[in-house]
Image (cartoon, rainbow, N blue to C red; front, side, top):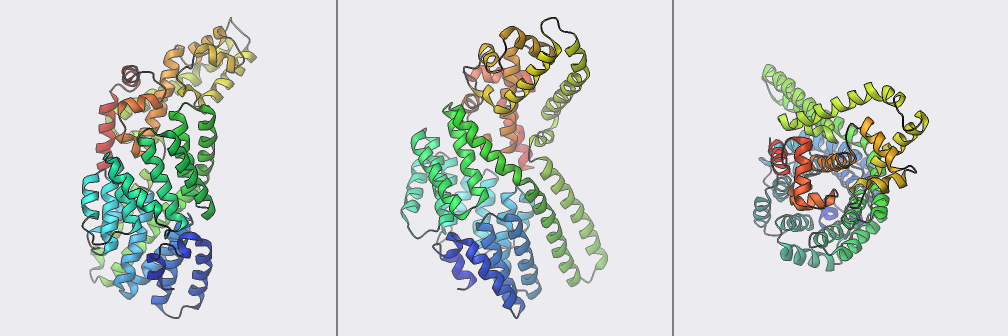
Length: 465
């Protein structure tokens, strides 16, 4: 089969058994006798690794294919290679790198990637209108369209589209997985948790068949979020731990991808340099681009977790300074605190502190009926001892302590998952354990110095910049 046949036949081996296609592509690379065949073989290998969830290897493959396509000036292969490059860039929020291809790519691949760029920018109307300009939508286009409908709360349109995709038996396992994930999200949004669970579990089963770690992680994350919304803490902890396990394994892969992006962009610049007679101008371009690439990669790595907050001017600076001061103060006073107790021995106090630290990592503070007595019972101590330890070591009373844990949890969600920026304040309040909208806003403002609405708007504006 040709490369185009693999990509357009959605029931092909590529989407059902990418491992087999990887083996075939590696054979084609060894037997290729010209640059075009080499580029095609590397592209096939790249797509197979991408659908298998091996994004770091896929990026290496497509970078080679893109370089060969540029060398041979093959517009078709350039379009396809840049299409996959952009998909990987967007998966890792490297939108600045993907944008450079959009203006010059006017093929169907360019329209598809342009629509996803609008989606990632939060411009769902533009995403929808761009896709509807195409005479024929691919399954990838339809999935993006359904997700945009969900974001705009056009639930009936989203459901009709997803239901028609679900009934189509011609799609391979990769697309079946994503369809099930989106159906789960639809039912989650309309608060039909039973159907949402079923579709998320179907997605997990499909994802495991092709052993795609990213799709498996998405299924774990969605199941964990759903059970958290249902206040099923045990189930939430199970899926959250599985999600965290996969996420930790991907840290090195993310770093590898950042490095590969940087090196490939330099190769592209060097190719342009060879075609440019003005060497001085090209050296300046390389220097500036290299600096911007390094800066972007550095910011991207920092932003993977809570560090993204530092981009939000005075709001985030206040939060970070407050956290740092608390940490320094706690470190300076911990020895004195352990020595200055009339209530319990140093060993018992240290044991309670250790258990309290473990409690914070379980996210059980999100449970609405959490109380001093309940936690004391779980930590095998009494309320008097626990209250004393929290007052002296955390420098706050129990209620403030729990509220700040909840606010830190939702701050992390807002700064690491752009989906949370679209949720209503009442939903955010419910997810992090507050019993009312007003108590959440009050606690949020007490901790950050501003309201959730102002904070979300600041993050949104920063992301656009």
